Length: 241
Image 1 (spheres, one colour):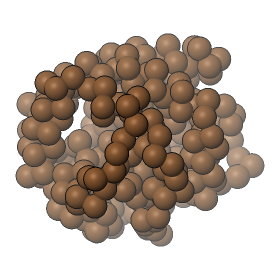
Image 2 (cartoon, rainbow, N blue to C red):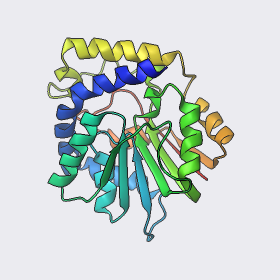
Image 3 (cartoon, helix red, strand yellow):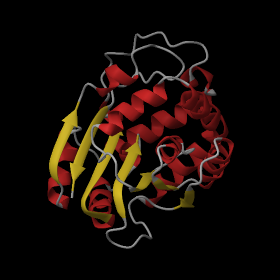
């Protein structure tokens, strides 16, 4: 199981620099406000919150939420991603604490955060049930988990005929990285069941309550087929402790 984590880390090390450039562009686009609109549906308004961005990548969500005045920490298993997250936050003038850390087993004390946010992470985890239990542990009572993800391991072909723009990240990937991504996806599929139904079951088992699923978020975030477009429909799962 740990071997797949090493493989995922190596893959994202290759992509870290290009990913920062893409996320900086996304931060300056109207996508930022679209993401904030989604966050506001679940985050308590008018409160000072301590937020953890799990699988922060190059810090896109962390920077968005820090700009709103929240105290934000970002963690990622890939050291190169954390390096680029620190660089991105510096460029945007945001004070964020970034750490290299395993999302399935963090170093935080219990009840440390008011909110946990994550994007396109849980599909890469070989122990999703363990991750949800861990996130429940480090959330404060009344805290909220907001997970944006997709069923990448069993994605349908419904959007396979979409013509992506030439500046899209998928078009720019070298062939060996595309092949590696496909191989990783097949390997991870062994550990997963259909989502988000499976996630709901795991969240209930972990102790979460008031679980809600939004299958339409991808239509709002990715209304245009541009360089940020995700051809696999994402969903939102929000759950409270």
